[in-house]
Amino acid sequence: MWDRTDTDQDNRGLYNYANDTFPSNAGTLEDYYVNIRLHYTTTGTPGEPTNPNPSHNAMGIPATGYVTWDFGINTDTYDLLFGPAESMIEVVSGADAGTSGMYTYTDLNSGSEYNWQVIAHNSSKSTTNGPIWSFCVTAILPIAENFDSITPPELPNCWSKINDTDDPFAYVETRTGSYHTEPNYVRMYNYYYTNGNLLLISPHCNNTVANTNITFWAKSDYSSYDIHVIVGSMSDPTDASTFTSSETVLLSPNYTEYTVNIGTISDKYFAIKHGMDASYTVIYIDDIICESYLSEIDDVVISYNNGTEEVELNWSYPVIADSFFIYRDTDPYFTPNPGNKIASTTSTSYSEPASENKYFYKVTAVK
Image (cartoon, rainbow, N blue to C red; front, side):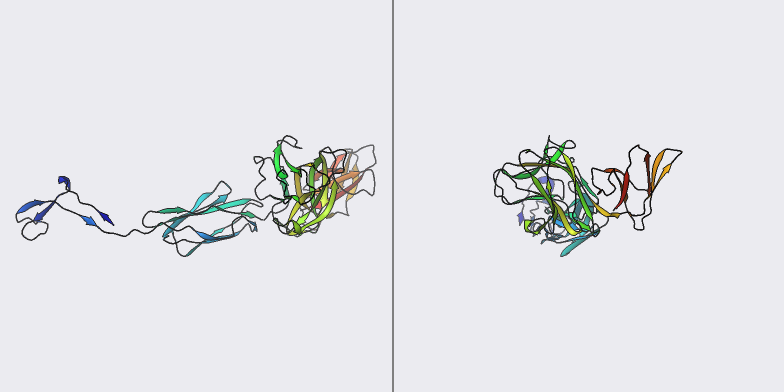
């Protein structure tokens, strides 16, 4: 309720003295002060929006889909902000509100984090800013991460960690300094304890190809102990018990490139786990690539071009592949690995200058 009595002469009214009405052209005019009392009821502040779907911090959300929410009480209209983390834009403005809302999106970036926020308004010109909700889009392979686009000690968007060692000095975080490629790397440190789990976990992946390779650079800070990391996959990035090991890797005290095949990671996450071999152990990880390895190609035709003095490789592949890796070794029975990989190409041919050495070549398809 609002009461006001105003005796300012500028706010006086002119009344017909005879019948208390505003005067017409005829009649006697008299000055009377006007006392005005207004009575009205205001609508309360809009309630905060609730019940987001996807839920806040959800993982593995499709690149095309929709978000929904429930409006709070006293909401008449709303705006919606939506977009990549820290870069939201207004995608809905002044739309009528009901009991719930929905927004459809398409073609979001693979493996990226998106935020959204509902701004509620009502007829009394009251506004309530809803919470900022976020979700991560399922990643499409290949995934490449060098950890250089973020500010330490944070992990990149949609990457996560588990540290259940109960040690306040243990951590999984990005640092600067001892990198493979500057400026950042991931540092895993277990301090005193050798039990519990320290895990670096990827964005959610949905890859149905049977062969998935994880390639990464890593080192330990010990030369007198055998220090390992365990590479594998997990179904729940918040539950270390869902981790399944694919291979245990013995680390060098110098940065070395390693490749592990973890099979199919449909609806899963890949992860690198601290081996907990000794107390006070630091593990350094950088430049991770996860990609589908379709198969080794059998029908590679190798020839020598007298005109160019080059070795030429040609092949065909019936399945759509994103690229091909070429490997070379002096052992005819060698296994393709980062140490004998010499090139990658998107074509079905490759050539290089001939050598006096006798080399054997292999080609793999990657998706």
